[in-house]
Length: 193
Image (cartoon, rainbow, N blue to C red; front, side, top):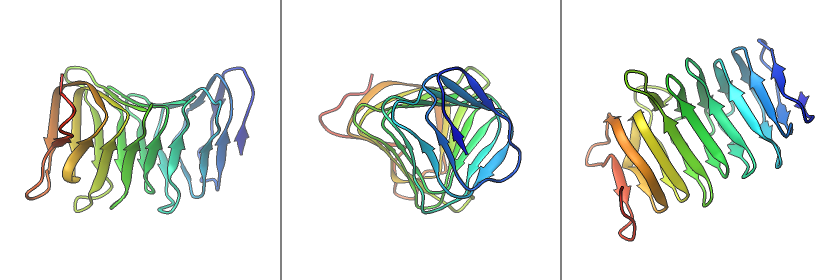
């Protein structure tokens, strides 16, 4: 399935699909819960993809890549499950009440120029967690992190490994920190706000 064009679009699918490509330069809203078993491709030049319900990327071999031009926004009440991990070159925004779940041993990589934004509100957090209770995942911030009213659970021993920029890190919780691990590891050349 391909979502192209220059006007706002909605994708109202509830059945599992093999592949989805989004190249729309404005906005595509995924309005129903569904699963992608193969590739979820966000093309260079794409605009905003809004996940309004649960989206499961079930392949453990395919990494979701958000290009520099794109914003992937997880709305309140929605969960984005990426069993193969996520690379952020653009913006990954998790709104209040939204959640991102990563597969065991996978990585949330925010590349230089990318932004991970956890935009929770008081009493309505933005969350990142592992797929199952015994699972862990890595978070590497080479780009930027902006987190407010958030919960991050079950990271690997370094926790959030920051070699990039921390714009904000306020009103948050870290749960199930790895034994002998940390919530956040900051490169010696960096400062926290």
